[in-house]
Length: 527
Ligand SMILES: Nc1nc2c(c(=O)[nH]1)N[C@H]1C(S)=C(S)[C@@H](COP(=O)(O)O)O[C@H]1N2
Ligand SMILES: [Mo]
Image (cartoon, rainbow, N blue to C red; front, side, top):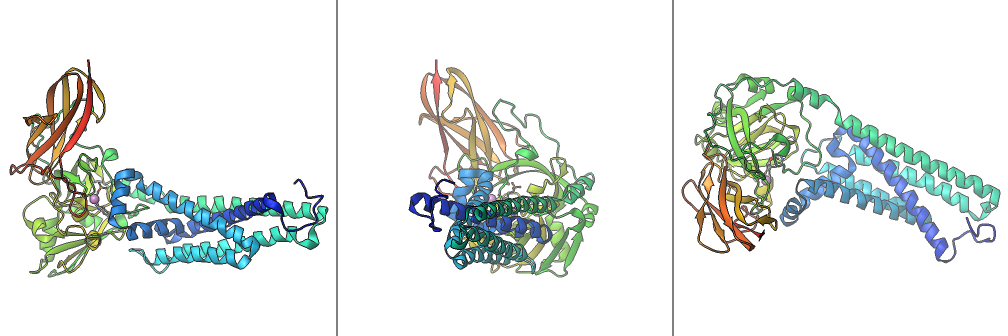
């Protein structure tokens, strides 16, 4: 280190000295934060992945966020919104931890106070989570203790090295080495504990449970697919969305891990008798297989949060009737293992539609991200009002009970809105003049689609060709062969549902009941 031999001043002088001091403070803080987070992950292997400090804080932020921010995140980052959130939380923790280190070199107690505050924030977040248990605070508590201990030890070592009484060069050299060794040990410990924690949290047990599940043949198979149910033009999404491509929207930062063997469903509330079912009980019942389209209230006009799959499950109405629905049970409030609560009108579940407690999707047990081992799906309702994943509890109740999204101001019923989307050509793309295929999907779950129309450059509306309707619960693809002349053109699309009701032109935002408006794209036609 330049200047060490000439200076007698133990305190850093000038901006280089100050900078060096800030740098080593930040490094100590970073190490303390890493040790804290590592220990937190390790303890969370026993208390549940959702209770790890960073995850608990992230979850709390999701639940506190105003809907505008949530909508923005879903639209801007899509399914990546969680990666962005967790990254942001970790970055904030690391920066605050570094600040704690810098403070601690001056005043140890001040640095400790920051670490304690962070740990307490984690504990509060974990304790107030929707699925909090008595042990939920332990990872953040352990992280707090590990963070403080690391900070104290490293600061003592580091300050000991530059104490006025220890400025002799030989002493300094050993001191420096000790600090470096201690720092390295802390870093190694953080990586090991964090890595072990993550490994243990994952565990192969869930994958094994899912691999063991055998879904019996449905007593009522899906009706045969009619001829012409699908167009196959390049760029068009297939009728059945593959599971890996099925859109995913939820507030779960870590996927709930519910092995089928441990799953049970409780049906209670305004019911004549309470029912509890195991997964085997469920599979022993007559299963039905249905093709259903699901969409998200957060989907913007022309957006990607709509998909279709072949589901197998138990009719929800039969389960509720078995429990004996008492008069006045207006709403079924379902709860997922992530603590999510979703309310659906009882009347709609009972009106004969294919409301399912689903266990399989496109020929396999539900993927974990789509609700393994069981989820609800009620055709005609947006996902937030019907499609509870990892469902474990069905409560027959009144509208006085306010589920998650209703507390946040969304529409109480959540009917899925009619939508239409242009998939080819892509917005702002260039196509060659001549015949150009314009194609996409349109959906109005449970009402069906009766027409899709296109307008070019504000001209008259033209009918597009439609695939054969599979069921009113599924989307239809549409296609139009356009004679494209060179230039820049605007293409607009609109659909009419089964009752002939056109999508409204007036734009509506996602909040509080789903977006409205006609999708419109601009393409350039070249000669
Ligand atoms: N347990 C649970 N279920 C949930 C959610 C959730 O956050 N947690 N999100 C709902 C929303 S808003 C939608 S749109 C659908 C999406 O289902 P998917 O991810 O399988 O497409 O799940 C619904 N079910
Ligand atoms: Mo949604």
